[in-house]
Image (cartoon, rainbow, N blue to C red; front, side):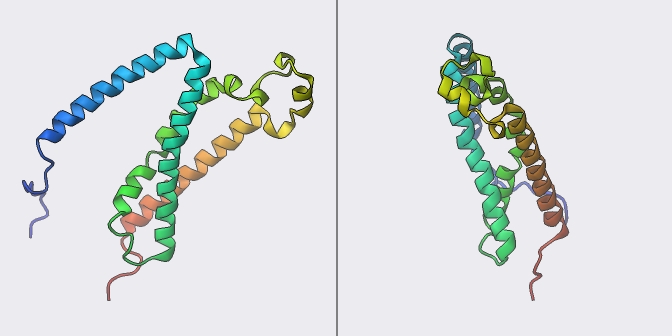
Length: 169
């Protein structure tokens, strides 16, 4: 058997897939431009919506990482089919780190604890602003978690290249 790639027509996506892909890209670009325009005129609503969407997609990427880690721990053949899909979703974590930048920019609009102390009007809120929720500490924790997640992704890629953990008998 040859190691050259064979392009089997049965394995290829149908031609309509290309049309759907192009239309989806156009719709995504249009709505991204609309979101940026809304971000300039109504930044509070923009950052709240962006945070919601970011958390939804972060849940997909981190959930995929969790399922893949459980599969590696338990072994067996139950996760063979979903391993590639979960690995691909997990590899979006560096992209999610980049997409976190608008949240960093809008953090004072999203969270009262990220605002400077002299801009908080209510006295009881000033009194409850504690060091553990300071914005700098939050950024450093986020950076640490991103580094750890990247290490997990790298480790998974090394394990995947090494071959199966339990060879067939």
